[in-house]
Image 1 (tube, rainbow, N blue to C red):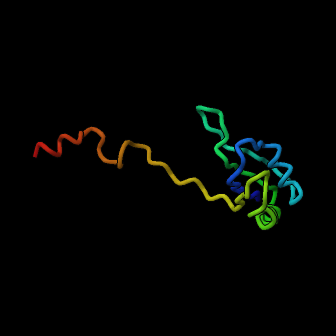
Image 2: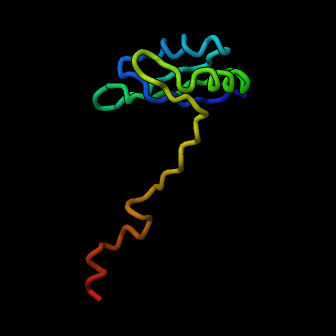
Image 3: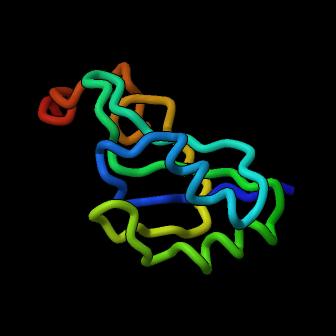
Length: 105
C-alpha cells in the first residue's frame, strides 16, 4: 500500500519535478504535488508525495526530514487524513432560524 507524505516549508519556487527528484532515491514516487492557491496560482509552500510502498515512505521521511531544499529546511512526515468538513452553515444548527429569533423571546 502506498503512503502519502507531507512536505512542508517548501520554497515558493519549488515544483513537482523537484519533489520527484528529491524522493526518487528512496523508492518509486507514485505522485508528487505541490499545493497551489486557487486564486493566485502561487505555491502555498507545501505539498504531498506518494511513494509506492510504506518502506520507501518511511525511508524518505527518515532521510529527508530536517534537510535543506534550496534555502529552506523542509519538514517531511506522514500525511494525516483531512478532517471531515461540516456540510452546513455555521455551527450546524437549524439554518432556517435567524439569530434575531433569540432576542424576541
